[in-house]
Image (tube, rainbow, N blue to C red; front, side, top):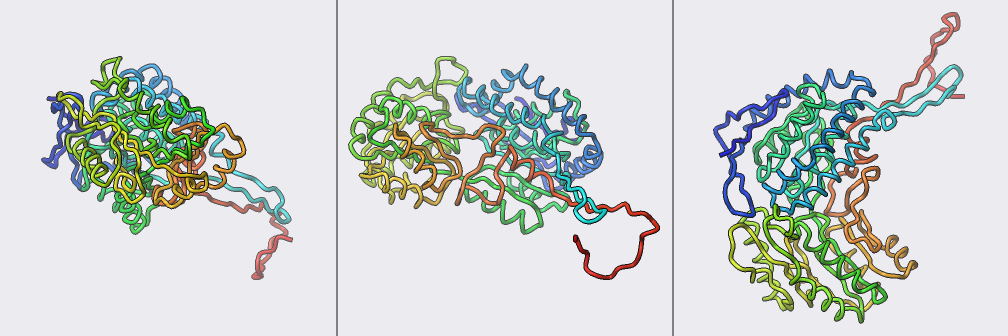
Length: 494
């Protein structure tokens, strides 16, 4: 059985805690590996290694950092199929989806290669007589990323590319459910010429997370996961003096107005609701059908469900793979039962899937869902799509704005005025107009509002540069020595 160790000081390092966790192939249900789970002492060793590396790496020129990122980018592009296969094996998503995940991560690396431009400051000549003022951005030192199981390649690349480009040493604590992608990335960074210790991987559970959140030499923590854990990470990290961005859960809505193109809306609902078996923080989990389009829309979505091919992600014909674990599958199945018991109309029941090995659940469609039901209030994180019927656009927007989450929202319409009004009205951090999963491109930033984000900066893009650096303003004078004198008055600029 494969053994997955930490990556510390530029090489794999076996765990010493005596604790390991199982890693499964979700498509077969078989355990394929075990991963070391770090103790707080092992995290301290990793941080110490990163701290030494950070001091040297911040001295590296912007050109050198950019050159390493360009080499990493070329290696990742050439070998992306290897990484996608690892993601499919341990997460379960179909290979095409895993390849898409890697491609989106690659976009963030490409953005970070522009670090010489991204790190530019400002300069004001003659701010006062003989005085110049300029701003610079400097790295924080050792920073950490705590990443979820659903995107074991993309989310680490959201964080590490920007953090490393900015001159920091980065410590990654990936999900223990699918940890191999992290070590693969570490080896690729080394091959690209990144100095030892600048990219570190510590595997683990809550003990490792708490050790990173409380370690005095970790300056910042970036997190993606559920809202309760995001809140915990934010409160614990900030209580220990750290800069924290913690992205939480979501309940993303897709409004379909009566004038929408029916087939396009139905296709989008299927794609965004059931892609990656619904294990996406930007998945559409609620379709808000406005007025007379409700019946034909539900009919169109239902007609497409039997055509979804569910199977092993390594099978090129599969369109939807398994869930990450047996426990999570059973949890999602419990929500389906709760929805039916609460009065939702079960149009398609994913629990009816034929018995097979692995952690599979079929595509589920629930109609007549109301805001009081747990299938509406809770983030299910599975292939369950709920239909909520309303009479007006105003009711639809109010429904979204009343929800505790504010990650993403979409509208499908042919009316440009309604679409423009929606982007103005809706309380969500990412908005799609006839786009069901509005994940921003790498040169913008990703993040939600309300309970979907703890902290004041979004992830990657320009916000990522600001998160992983801090500003400094320098006021400079080079006077003629003959004009120097003591002046105890308040500094003047005029």
